[in-house]
Image (cartoon, rainbow, N blue to C red; front, side):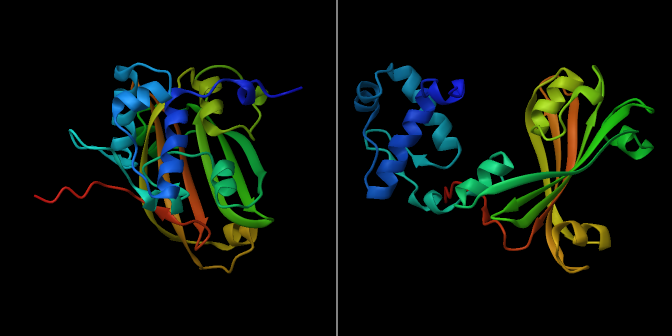
Length: 241
């Protein structure tokens, strides 16, 4: 049976991104809004909104009365700090085969520090999951996830699901934003054994908090990325004045 997601028609933004890829690879510019609207069988206002989103993410640069310039440098960036991508998709984007292993899963009570930091009631139950992703069989990422159990039964949730889906099931909220704090951390003995790296080896650390539009904290996670496994970048406009 085919996956319904695979047979669903591509969104306007997805089709526009495909045009961006073709233009970036060939060194061309994107045509103006009227031509894009005709090519995409869409209205100019809808195309304009999609272009605004692409420009905000650094894919293009638009100037009134001129064609749209594309940022070819993004073709070589599989991972961005400023854009969320599911870990398995990220590994596939690097041309490698992903594998996810759930190393541990348990329901525990929230710590006092966590309750204070995330504005949750002391005693709140929390589903804690330790996950490891491998690329072509080599461990590259270790994540320690925590999702507060505000509804439902954590025992009914598959810990291998993406964290955003677990959060919907256990908090009733969908994450709209992630606050990401990058840093550095060394693998301790347990972590080093989990990713087959030397004890004390430095790793890229990302502390991530998922927040719903209501302000509810839906999850927090600490990720350790094996050094050199991913090529991360951040894209920002260089509007020199």
